[in-house]
Amino acid sequence: MYMLENLRIMHPVVKDLIAEKETVWLNADLMPTDVALSSCLLSEEDVLDAEQRLERFVPFFIKAFPETAATRGIIESEVREIAAMHQALLDYSGKQISGKLLMKFDSHLPISGSIKARGGIYEVLKHAETLAFQAGMLSHEDNYENFASEEFRKFFSNYSVAVGSTGNLGLSIGIISAKLGFHVTVHMSSDAKAWKKNLLREKGVEVIEYASDYSLAVERGREQAENDPTCHFVDDENSTDLFLGYAVAGLRLKRQFTEQGIEVNSENPLIVYLPCGVGGGPGGVAFGLKLAFGDAVHCYFAEPTHSPCMTLGLATNLHDKVSVVDIGLDNVTEADGLAVGRASGFVGKVMKPFMSGCLTVSDERLFELMHLFYESEGIFLEPSAFAGMLGPVVVPSTDESGIHLIWATGGGMVPADMQQEYLTKAKQVYASRSHT
Ligand SMILES: *Cc1c(COP(=O)(O)O)cnc(C)c1O
Image 1 (cartoon, rainbow, N blue to C red):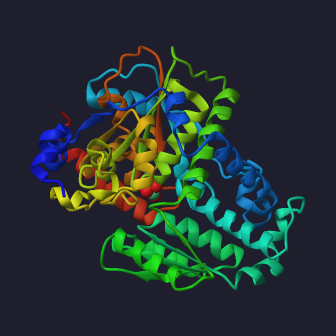
Image 2: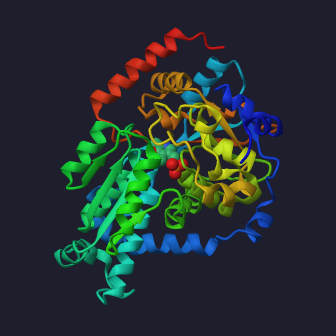
Image 3: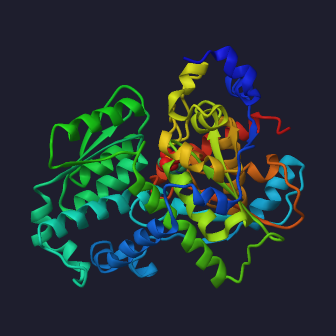
């Protein structure tokens, strides 16, 4: 067992974490991408395989989710400059931000309105494909539109899917599993929002609520699946399929940049700020980005000061062996999806040599940034989506040029009245703070 006092002495950042102070941690173990890749248990082939699987499902998406027709059956989001927010951040912080400020709008991904529409949906599709192959119902040449047929739905109704979630992962897994015909159970932690539970129930998903945090919800999901061989458990803490589904984003971003004539290289680096909960989403995306851009991309995880599990795990190398509760934090935050006390051990270990660092921000800061963003860009995002927004201001930079990319992770499906509540609060928080 480690001692708190030892952690504090060995790892200076832990002192800031304990004090709930906003902080930046830079990773001294960052390696050149090719070196890190050579000893990594996942490779580019794995990500390409995931991308090709998603391609095979295109006819299914167009049929089952007509909203994906606009992106030709691909679940993808827009990336673009946010110049008005760039100016607003400058005024707010009094600091110059070199280069350009861009946003990746995973907040508005089709089907489930968050970054979970990548990994979550991918894992269920892969599972469904495997079952169909095993049953002799499918060959590689078949049109995957079949997955939307009554025959397939009837087949999948013999199987179930379970997941533990703070909200958004449950939304993704629930929606896609129910559409395919699976019996699906979502174990929801106490911080999950009521509208997410209601939406899932409307779609025929079984939602079980817990009066405790995310870890217990995950544990219950795991137990359910252990006792039932026809049940697939989506393991947010350990799944490589989830991770690979997220990683496809990196390869696609490179293509989007090419289409827009945006070049990334050592003179014009890409610096990406990724809101982090258990780590699978941002870790997977960062892995894909490293494959796509190599040493020209610098990736940072961003977390709330009350739930900095990844910063704690990476900085101490204890990964999933330490929880934010162990250092006296309450793991309570308004940032849905980021209220995670213990990081994935798998992601922290795999991603350590690829990550440039981490930053933490207070909940008040998330609301201030929400206000600034709405005032400048006129777009609503949920609090989690702002975790990385201060990155370009606080992360030390040596470059005059460069592209700062804020990965916006959720908010697209938040009901209008809830949006209004958030924005009212954001305005109040903004007005009450001194902005220094
Ligand atoms: C889940 C989630 C994240 C972080 O993803 P992890 O895989 O838990 O690290 C970030 N933002 C939002 C809105 C999320 O739902």
